[in-house]
Length: 112
Length: 113
View 1 (cartoon, rainbow over the protein chains, first blue to last red):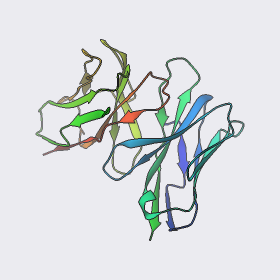
View 2 (tube, rainbow over the protein chains, first blue to last red):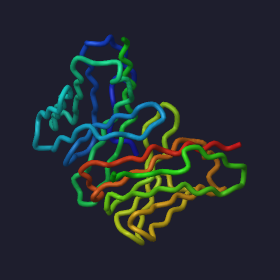
View 3 (tube, rainbow over the protein chains, first blue to last red):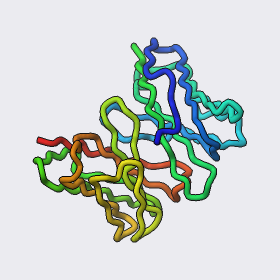
View 4 (cartoon, rainbow over the protein chains, first blue to last red):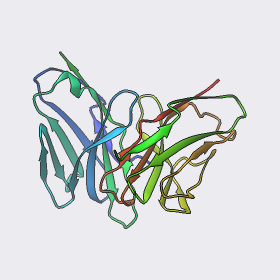
């Protein structure tokens, strides 16, 4: 079953612009993670935010988490053509042994 | 270099044939996973294993089988019972099932011919 839902499904921007992707989920979580997938490749872990955190930064990435709204956003600042990829959120449940559940992803295209 | 290796990169299967996809990791991770990805879709969990000689069904286990005889290896067999096997298959591993982050292989693209 898919827990996370990303929005929008697809996003096209110009180089230098910021890109914002959103993720909503249904049940309580202990962490939320964002992954990137280049076409035809495996996923790469970008950033993890725990349920007691509200915001986290890593380079040009900024992730926010609002557990009251069960939503998260990923902001990529000053985007580059090389950021073109699919971005997935994944949620880890609260119960011990609960494995990650992935959303269906946002396809980001950054035009040079 | 530590990592997770999937082979082959491309695989073709004839109708009624079983095929096995390989997944090997040298990260000393306890947990391993198999996901299926269809075009433009997210990842669906097929099977996962938290420890050697133990594995659990995921959301779409029918028509698939796995084994976990060694910590490093988690092969996936796509059986003839899987009626629509054409997809991109991804293997992943993590220190434990709850994460913190999963490391993915580069995938195997399976096509039925």
